[in-house]
Length: 418
Image (tube, rainbow, N blue to C red):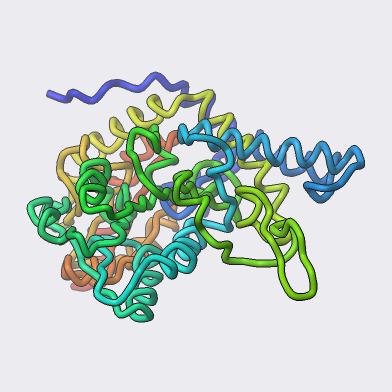
């Protein structure tokens, strides 16, 4: 019997808030299940961006005129909202970047450059997105450090029995995905972080697929870094967040240098602005930062716990429905309590790209490919998977449409091969 709490969401009202969901694709109602790549935007977010450009378009900080002050106030209000959303110590811990990838690279090229030496190691997992792999590959090569990987078990969870031996006094950083974008697995980052801290190592959490879908409290997790993106949580593209713990941020050197981040400059030297502005050189993406604030306001209104429970309910239902499909393998934990709203699947008789194209002909949007986790695909023994990723506006009816259309795809391609 299911122990998942039933969500309390008005799905009709929620779906009505998203203009894009009203359209048809190839003559069929849009079924959008590519939320792990990017989420849709409610009208309040779209309007907030339009309002910025039509009513108070101006650069932020230092301007004394009315438009600049208004833009600055709303720009910094968004930073405060993000701080409250993840329960950080203050808004000064929130650095604006372009996306999660830039946030991870920023840590690697600043804190990593300063703190890693030859013989040290960095601990990752075998399910990491390329964005949480490639920066550490480069850093390890430059510093002659070692990369270590927590293995993935057959059920899609991490082999936690190996964590204690992989993290040692030579470990400087553990960088781990909170929720896998390919498997949906929710990793025990708090537990792993406790082990890291016992060895005086830092822990970085890739929250790209967790922060949009469940309550995340950086103080409770005791993480040293947290990276995530606006566009996966109803906000605009081009805005990422890097949270850094106070004790670390104060000693980090800036990565980008130029306007806004400087306090004093001479022809030969410069000093840096206060936190977090010293990490935000140049004119920022003002309109989309303000749009991000509208997205957070929307999420808070719905309630992150309600969203989390809704997705758990959807995943539980989807896992049962997928069992109706012949010769289709679903990857990740079988227990809906251990995974986010991501269903990656593979059919030995159908190439994932054929599945994606067939589904699109019926208005169903899913993602196909390696999902920027090529090493994981090799571990799974498949070239790629199809991935349906869910969010607060998805319904059980849409899951039924997905499964019924997959059944039709299987019949179609099986007949075509005869």
